[in-house]
Length: 310
Length: 310
Image 1: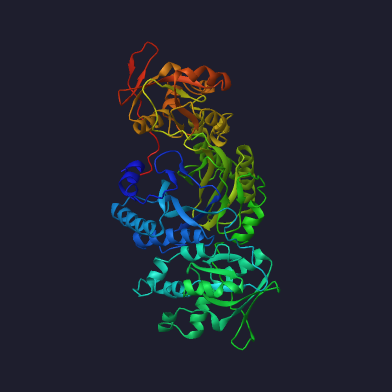
Image 2: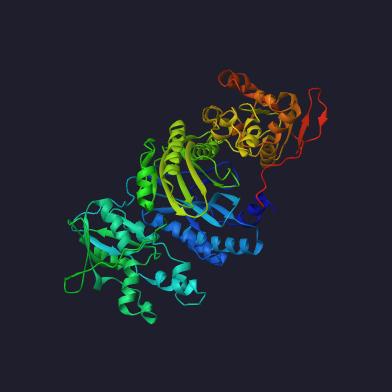
């Protein structure tokens, strides 16, 4: 089976059509029409076997997780999804693997309304690179650098489940939380709703503290987080102590929950529409990140891990 | 050195600014503004060490070649270049390598007016994935499927040099033709000029016969190529017999020269502006590709190789 027959057999039936796509798979380029007063947003993400996912993980889960991770960057800008391209590098052709992968891709592409518009298939050690495409009204995308002193710091959902379940996954042990790792839910609707409201936003992929540091560095501000307010995923307490669960929520990555800076006036409206949004602290003028307990006392920050590639 | 400091040190000084880019490196997504009545075109390409380039090739050459190959897909649509993202997977951090790579990237990015708008840096075996972005007037991009019976089949420049020099490169032997392999020149100006004139177009990456087959398959037509008219690169004759040089022009890849289908009325104008354009045959209603000699007699097609990944 050559490159062209593989694409035709396994990828041409991803039939999600997004109305902005004017030319899909099969030519030198794909084409996307952006309405007047909108702009295109795009991001690229690579996942390497043994670095970003266990080498023997199931192809369906790999597809759903990797497209969700990539799509979360669209959510983090407040963008409307359009499509994606996939550069897939495979050590060999395994029809069962490709069939499962294609099913997973179809599941997530439909969930996010993303059309597969192009790709590349090469031989080599297993890795996947996704480029995702979305659109936002001109100058309305929510960047990392807009946080203002006094903004409320909020997260879009509970934290820690993906990092908490990872040790089970690495040990090939089934666990009811594993969908938090394999099928994360990019907060696309919340992201779009926050347009014109949130001053700054990103998605939590490296962990709350690491990503909060990225945000305050870009915005040249500080932040104070109240540990007691952090929405630790309650099911983590079935497996971990409260301390350890809090640590997972603070430093574990892979949740793909939004972290954003909101003027206080909008909090009630946002929470009425998105029940899981929690105000965990505030933006300060201190130029650093501090963590406090319920009594307002400073707590030593746990070591911020984030994934170090080198 | 971590991911962020590497990006900051080696990639933030690629200072080419393209006026369509409204948000560059450093956020969850980059943003591109597309003028009214234009559409965005995009393509993704992966190059894997040992598959698409020799494992120990110099980083400067790797950068210039890979960005040129990716950009050639924009030329093949008749698009105006805007920007690119790069997902770079490296086995380790070598500052000298990164410095050379960054210089090569800057050289090609300036040559093509492409702004680096985002990327991803991961650890793993060496591979590069480029997404390139350009724009064309709405519905004016030149696709593969528009060839019409009677169109002249034309190529944009001489053929065979890249494939001819490859054996020297693989043997680490210096050769004056090596820039044809490492610094191919995507025919961006020719591509744009052909908008509204050429009925179908692609760039020759797999070899003339293989890519012509892609074009006639997409267009559901046939083609006849006159061997005597093929612009075999004359310097190939310093190293190869005429037969072998013709074979390289027919089946060797990597030239990144445009192949297009032109109504006869435009040929003089196109050749006046682009001296290297050559009419090598015509589109036929036969649904197959035939090769003839100067006397019009059929010649057996050489085996079409194209690169088979699997």
